[in-house]
Image 1 (cartoon, rainbow, N blue to C red):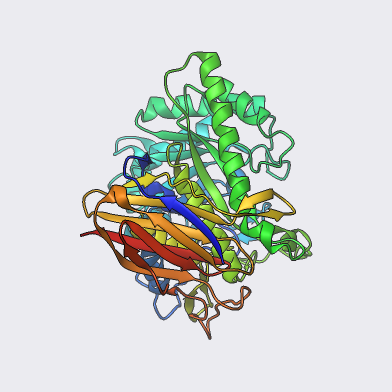
Image 2: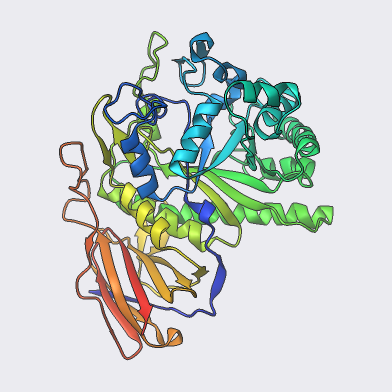
Length: 502
């Protein structure tokens, strides 16, 4: 059995655990909204037509923020279509996803849903087909109390108090040729800067996100961020990153090491942002909003035939995740936590049905996908401060990323409760990994729960009929003795070990 070790020391502090790390994403795409969060005829539907079963699972997932309404959808969206009497709202063709948008759910409905779910909204403005004035109109509708055209219209539509949305995305993936209104970096940077400056004139307390690269493989990666930030550095607080991962051609080892690419992505964007900061002589630092990330089998979507008509809420991007997907996702969460000094917000894309941890049947059941579990457990137990652990681990060769460590890990420590939590992935496809953890710097500690997401079939999936086929189970044999914690991590596994003082 191969061996690895690491040290837990409260002095090895990276940054606080940011609650916004555990955000998700709701886009008008496929069945995310309709028969996802909203289905008036469902047995669990509340007075606003929202599925209570999905609301309960959203709370259990530990979601803190939700990005809305896109995504590619936002680049052709007229937000005014989604306010006022539902029966008077127009139906529109959505070019991004070749669908018809009925606008039964719009801004005010979504904000009611966020309050029920207990999450912070993160709003995106359309900088594809629209610009400064439309963003100002939307902001006025959302954040001004009363006494103006748009604020009084909100009140007339039944929402007296402002929505008070703080975090705003200035467009979506504008580097992508697939995006409606795709722009060059210079064009987008100037538009983002002009929009952001005007929005701050209306509401100075906003937090603004500029579009970064929609993937580290984009041919404009790096130069895009540099050019956009040259134009908008003084206006924005964040630059976005988007990344999706999938297993290709049975290469499980590379897939399990996807966090190596995410590490590279984050490090490169940080270096670019700091370079622009130095050139401009700026004092403030730009952080990262990693506001789209997930396992997504994009190749399946790209190879599918588009529908001939324009359906409402067709099943799109409904990946059914297996155990290896969940382990990989857990590794991506470890990466995000490890970079908490600069990644201060993130959004798992998406929440329901569309490449999502929650799945639903129209009129029927809702259940947890395998990827639900590492997200929910990390969101529930990562508290206090993120600790750097610097694992010493055997390596193995991958076709995509070269040599990578078998062990990937991060820890958090909550000074208030005295709890230290270790999150660890064993990337080996065939062997368990014996882990020794030096805990002497923590003082006397004892194990207070350990779980693993693992199993004999790495391609096992959950379903409505078998919703708990893949679920966390106790990790046996965890023991602490003489300042050393020992555990054996199964192959292809995501693991969480909690320690408490005493």
